Image (cartoon, rainbow, N blue to C red; front, top):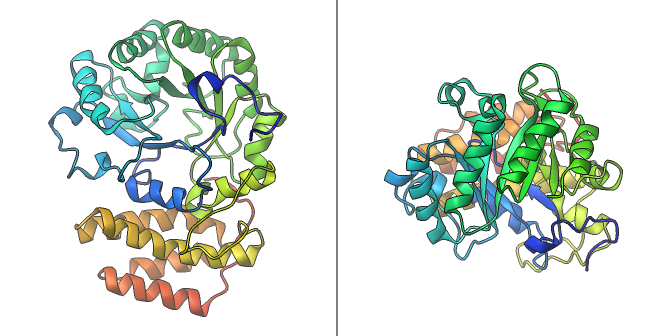
Amino acid sequence: MEHPFLHKRFSRLGISFPFFIAPMVGLSHVAFRELIRFYTPKNLRVICYTEMLSTRRIPNEKLETTEGLKTSENECDFIPQLLGNDEKYIAPSIEKLMTKVPFGFDINMGCPVSHTLKHNWGVRLMGDINYAASVVKTVKKHSPVPVSVKLRGGADKVEDPAYLFDFTSALEQNGADFITIHARTRAQKHKGDANWNLVGEVRNKLSIPVIANGNIQTSADAIQVIQHFGCDGAMIARAACARPWILWQIAEDLGLNACISNELLPLQKAPRSQSDEAKEYGKACLIFLSLLEKYSQDEQYILERFRFFVATGCRWFQFGHYYWKTCCSAKNIEHLRRVVTEFNEKFQNNMYERINMI
């Protein structure tokens, strides 16, 4: 069942639930993607992105042991996000990743971090329309599955709608099947409000689907960018670390069949109140820790990924900073499990609906 206001541009790609989980460095690994699916109704086809993957490294990495390349058993609705611009690296990277049967491939044209910019990767690709379009053409040449691009609302400090229209049109003409716009400029990074209206304007000038990303913190936000701003989809990023059940909330709010059949999850409906979301967050952290152990034997890696997950999501909670400090005090996995359990039992760590993004 599809809600009547959802746009149809994604239909040709087999996507009827146009809500996505973003590629986030250090976060969008296999354990996090499985946590999201744990809280997602099984009848929904939900696409999660991997974290950013360097095409210079992929050809020489092992799919089974490289942390960023691991997938869960039979995972197919995922999109590896590629960082790169050179065909001699892009082609073998795609060939290798195709053995994992991904839904598609995404090209990163939005990362503002300096080490990506020096290689003419990330948001720097937005500085040259023809060059960026050639990268899309190259990926499309080697990919038998859909190709998307994630970019920013502005490559510099100020948005330039006319340039953005020209830029995205060139991506479309060179084979992009859909695009995601992080509706902040390069200078904003992850801070402040996102210009969802700009995304809607771009969408109206293209024929391919356009997804809005940036400052989408609640189910209402995700639905609003489609219903009121005319975007074809919504992509949730950091808020999913605090609210991994957000897709469940969206499905309920759209009146879709949102039952979750999971013996480990006794809830009949998605948590909603400050206290209920806080309680579930505590449980979700323990589930996440178990998933990290499932996919990695590197204790230091597990501790680092868990702390980063908490550092990202804890901002939505009343005692979030103290919780993060408590988790950082743990010396090993069993100690971490104990301190998380004890914190959950001792504190009512109420959740805020929205925060100021920093």
